[in-house]
Amino acid sequence: MNIQTDVERLSNRIWITKKSRMESEARLKKNNTLANTLVAYYTFFVLGFSIWSLILNASEKSTIIINVAAVIASVGLFGLSLLIANFNFSDRANQFKQSYLSLDELEHSATHFVRSLPTDQTQITQSHYDELYEMEKSYNNILSKTENHAKTDYVKMLIDSNKQDRLSVNMIFYYYLHKLSFNLFISVLYLIPIVTVVWIFITL
Image (cartoon, rainbow, N blue to C red; front, side, top):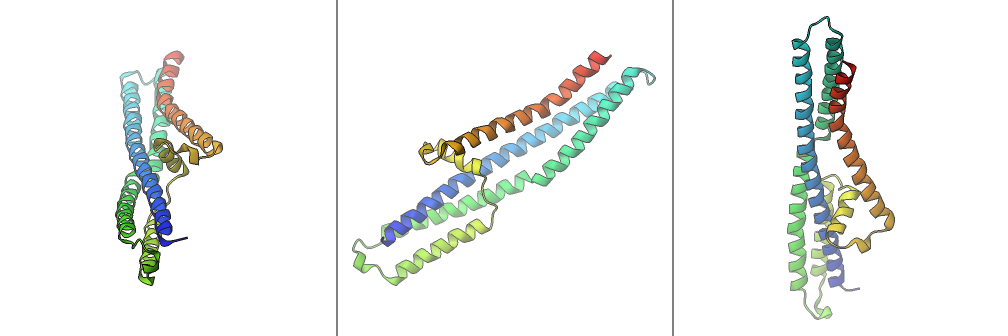
């Protein structure tokens, strides 16, 4: 095995990690937007329930039901806000961005290094191996500064790059199952206030 093969293997790892972390950034930014939209959505319903209860007669059964719905929505909004703050989508997305930008620079360095290698293997010196070692250290150092990307980010990157042949059937199944579960979960969060309003009208 020659040094060029080692560098190309490193370059491939850098490229895969860079692209996966681009997917991570995009996913977290999307989740951040979705989370803020959900908070605004639930806030609207909490305010709506509160105003609705003020309009009605305080002694009416409907007012009690609406007040209970407002309390439930307020607790849900509070829990959702805490959950979103804990996930810290925006800062994590920025960390992934810094990571893949650093990996992009390292990838360019590796490409330049390959091009500068002598074609004659006998002219390869210890300094070339030392430079390869430093690039490997840089790669590991970049990885250590950020959390690892999710498995789904890696799978999505390969699917989008038309490299799904590298994936097992189980990994592809896991990706689409995860995607379906996430979409169903978000749909349920959006439906809860609407179902509550419909339930109130039926009860009235």
